[in-house]
Amino acid sequence: MKVSRIAASGALAATAVLALSSPALAHVSVRPEGTAAKGGYAVVDFKVPNERDNASTTKLEVTFPTDHPLASVMPEPIDGWKIDVTRSLLAEPLEMHGKKITEAVSKVTWTATGQGIASGFFQKFPLSVGTLPEDADQLVFKAVQTYSNKEVVRWIEVPQEGQDEPEHPAPVLTLSAAEDEHAHAAAGAEKASDATANTASTTAADGDGTDTTARVLGVVGIVVGVAGVAFGVLAGRRRSAA
Image (cartoon, rainbow, N blue to C red; front, side):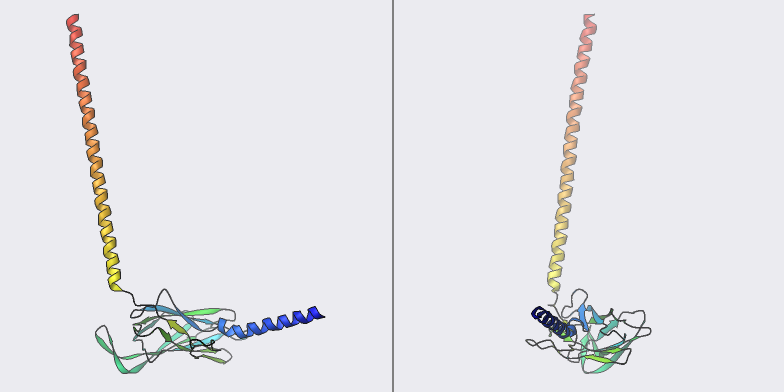
């Protein structure tokens, strides 16, 4: 009996842990393909899992941050999904490539034209975004997930540092340090210098090889010539003796 109670308690505890951890394990998230460097461009994927056994995900709405607006947002076409990009006027214009930008993308909506994301599956929704801000360490995107049974899940709670993850956390994109163009230029110059040095070494080695070959052929020629002269002298002496 005692063993049965312990087993039952363990099962209940395991169930509770799974119930508490499931939202954190299966929520809408965003990750870059490679890096998302400050001041640059990046391709990011919004990963959407289907958490329901009796419904499919048919719609995803991602709202973009207003404190760091992104002037360039381009979605990648996805079979079975209709994509709508919503743009809004900015409170303050942005400077981008020497031009003033007065509006930016405020929302991107993906709507399934077929079944959508079935139970037990996930879908990635890629976007090319930029220019990423230089004065921020992360960007928060609020997402709304709609199921075929009309259920709506709002992934809009902003995670706070030092606190437990909320039940429905908003997708957060972490930005890496800005890429140093001077460092890239220096690295490129160093590679070019190494390549030039290697070419020079190879040329010098080829020259040394050519000189060595010429010297060997010269010595062989001299030896052959001396042998010919000696043979001629011996032949003359034999004829005189005869």
